[in-house]
Image: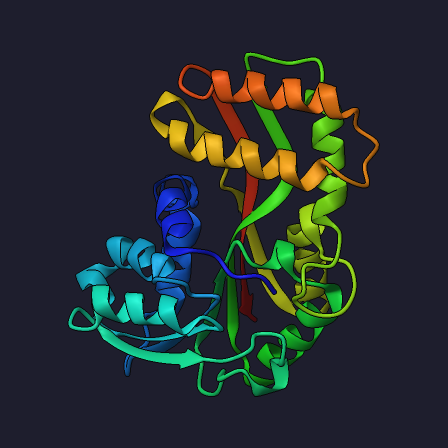
Length: 267
């Protein structure tokens, strides 16, 4: 599984925090509000963006929560500790997320993962949910890409680029074996969690990007163009023109990127 830079995570954090569904996040926090405290395990924690998002909504900043941050990238965890090591109780665990049986989930009240499951394969998600069910642990999966992207102003190649990008999102991303869940992640999680007896709630958490997000939009455009440049039979000149058009309008247009949040709690 490829890593993400601190600069990219910081660039997207504002859009992520604005998009995250607040009532569902508060429902996750309510589940964590236990008489003797609670342990939240955040998978793919990065620099602690989920910690920041939930702490901002939690009573007393979530002081009753022990945060176990798990990531394969030690530099990201070091940055999380630098930013929050004196603010709350943090355990940091550097480990390979692909090895589900070895993930430090013991004692978890709730496992969270943001912008992760759309990169994961079905076998990874199946194995993880089996562990959570055995423990009676809840799941809060936020910011799962759902396949929708809408631009203004429009461009004639938008639909073809989106189709190609969504196909690319379903290729193997290295988190488990086989194709990633991609835009189907939230629907897959909901169906599987319900089959395991969980109560499931979902909510939209779309990125709503405008001129104030021009730097993020430019990175998004470059990333999409790179992802679809090979294997998807798009004319290279047409794709280059689409990329040029999108970059030129990054500071004046808009972009909606569809995401869904999910909370699954034991009944």
